[in-house]
Length: 162
Ligand code: FES
Ligand code: FES
Picture (cartoon, helix red, strand yellow):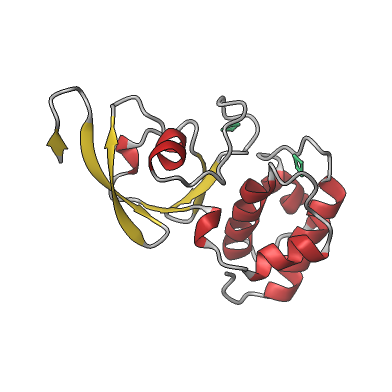
């Protein structure tokens, strides 16, 4: 870790399989750093209060609100944003089920769905409902999103999801 004398610190973040240098202040959120320094803008800046899930990323596979995480806490963690997915099976399911309207909430929902499929591949409807409650869709496309998530779980059937 190197300080530049102006209260910023250079650290390495592991994002989408790459190690990137970023210059952060102690109070910078992971969301800020991803968007403003790394140009990874799929995690959205919305409520910034932990209520909407638009800023969701995976930290060591766990869905995490990046608006509430400090960049400094993210050093040595493995961060995944939707930019790290490349035409994945889950993305295709969301397209096929018409689960995307304006798309603002979509990266967060897809990353949350990915974590659900890997942690609870046999989740029932109630579990799906509860799991996805951390994310809001302003276009209210919940029915389609639920269908896409269910389809991912059915097709996934205990295998590894990507
Ligand atoms: S912007 Fe982070 S939860 Fe809403
Ligand atoms: S698709 Fe528009 S906010 Fe969800």
